[in-house]
Image (cartoon, rainbow, N blue to C red; front, side, top):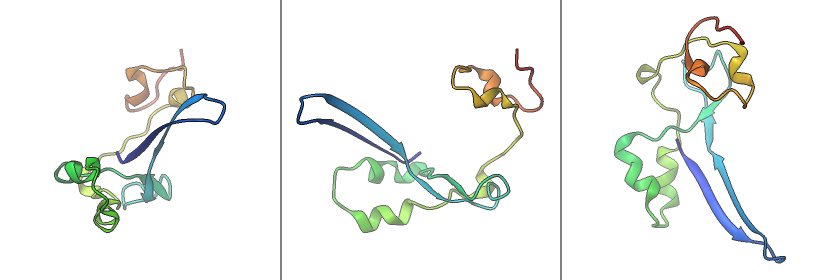
Length: 99
């Protein structure tokens, strides 16, 4: 996924790290779920995304919806809605017990 990360120091000398996931319009698979989706960078563009070169126009070309035919979607339970729940149960298809 396309993400941005930064580390900086405030005037009060507090060190802060922050990050963000970039989003784009949803592809055909994701549209019934949400109107946006994370930008998923195809493997052949990883080096471009991770490059320190200042190529904003080149980067814009890869910040697009991932091809729907390369993805799968399945329903999961509301178990995923709680950030405390950090296990493989979050990605199992179907109805999952909350306990």
